[in-house]
Amino acid sequence: MAQTEYIVIRAEEDGVHVIGLTRGTDTKFHHSEKLDRGEVMIAQFTEHTSAIKIRGKAEIQTTHGQVFSETKK
Ligand code: TRP
Image (cartoon, rainbow, N blue to C red; front, side, top):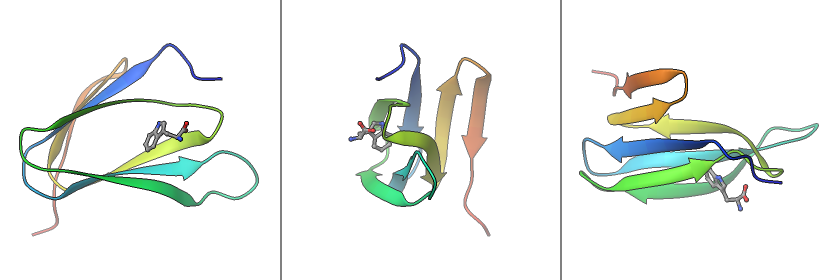
């Protein structure tokens, strides 16, 4: 079941990837969503999704606070 918590991801460059990883014995990518600069995705952790990986430069808001992902120079 989906939880009530949402995380907000706002892309700060083109081609940011929001990657969902499976819940359970093995942890695999199951979905990748591409965001362009300024686009926002609001996502939940669910019975299928135990972790979310952000690739690219983005602002991320969670109940734990605000963080920024960056790209390797
Ligand atoms: N079908 C996925 C699920 O229910 C959709 C999803 C939810 C998702 N949260 C996500 C995909 C976070 C990528 C990232 O779990």
